[in-house]
Length: 98
Image 1 (cartoon, one colour):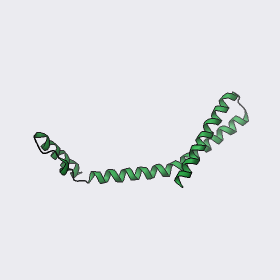
Image 2: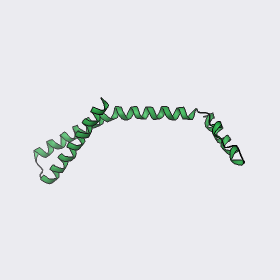
Image 3: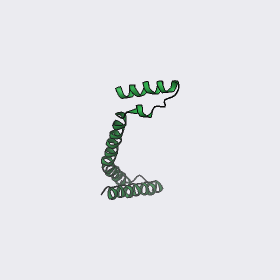
Image 4: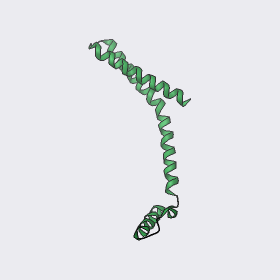
């Protein structure tokens, strides 16, 4: 279903771009141009109506991934030789504390 919705959004955007191209070639200030311009606003609303739920789902998924990463135990990834290990350990403890 999402594939179909995205296809509709793509076709609508293509139609909108072509209509803008035709209108720019007409170079007239007629009632028809005003009506077409208003229709193009509706096309934008349709596209955003299709894409907003998809983008919201992507945002939630990315947030869930980031929160999972934030709770991960980073101490097992610390390089254990020299002064760098102390710095990485303290940084990972700071991340875990938040």
